[in-house]
Image (cartoon, rainbow, N blue to C red; front, side, top):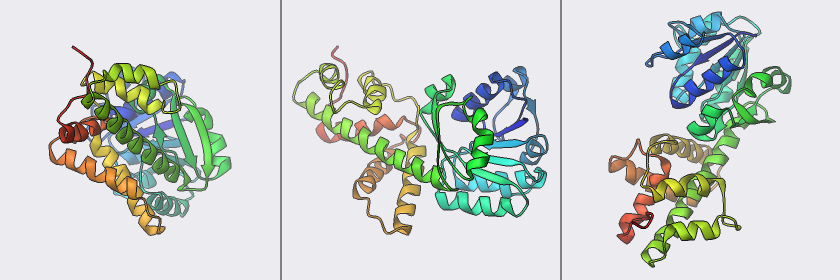
Length: 295
């Protein structure tokens, strides 16, 4: 099975490396980034999404947002111009579910099948191949590409029809954002009260309040390390997709809306490229305290 990969940012580059390590022939393309490192691992570097599709049985896209996926698949020199009937598109970007459904319908007119299969876990799990992958689309198509997905993720789950993968990712992003905000409030309170935040972390992480988010983000906060990881500008994109989807479905998400405004305020202060654990900076400013390890 020949694989193509479009989109070689922080996440996509690491994922493509794991596809190569898994023994699959790989053609790669990125509109902006160099692919020399992947060429050194044996990937074939091409100059358009169309060329990727022409060389591939399965085309993986890992792009920032809905317009980028539309352009890569539907645009001039896009995937559908090079794909053969029977080609499978696996869009691993985080986009609005309605966009996945729209692109899938247009692909089907040309005999091309599609899964939406966004991921969770950030750069560390992309590097070590332990991402959580949530896939929507035809179950038989999912079964065919599952061995490829398992080179990139340790949890690979089929969650329903096309669009269901991105609904699941939106649910994931709600939980992550609200969890980081809750952690931020809690540790700012502890710091303001004069209790060492690293001691609070050690005391509560094994109880009901403990979480993967806490384990991943509190050490970064304690070190003042806001290098991404998951960038605020991308999380706000995901929350925008959450709110657009919730409004379409007439579902009220007041806590998500509140965290969205917190993130927007941080982006307005120039922190768009910071890790999403920088949400704590909002609360630190309100309380005039920093959550850091004792000197």
